[in-house]
Length: 157
Image (cartoon, rainbow, N blue to C red; front, side, top):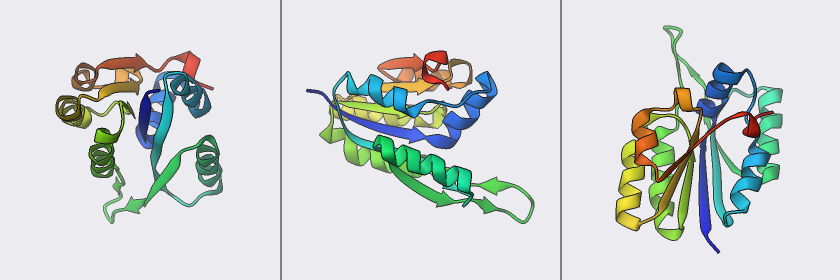
């Protein structure tokens, strides 16, 4: 049975599905789909913690599905801009996990991950899959993945 690791850039998926469809991503449907391909041995969702009730309910739902939820605090800068991305954390976890699995699934449209996918595919021979909103996913990321799965209405709620 294939061993699968799943890494979710929650902010990216939230904003791209909302922008493209006005809907939310259905993590339970994704879990069911991936479970048909093999055993999910690692599943991490990376999110920003704003501390509100709705967000905490969402994080609890992810944990109930089977995700480990990693949080970073939301940082509001003095100039009004905000910071809070998980690119480095996701990269470290993928690199530490890739040699132990057959498939790495990344949910993100962020082109910054293209080199990561190329690296783990070349170094470990791991199959890489990307799920993202096609119109909002970097072409470099799509091209770096072994397979790209556009998020459409079948994975929305």
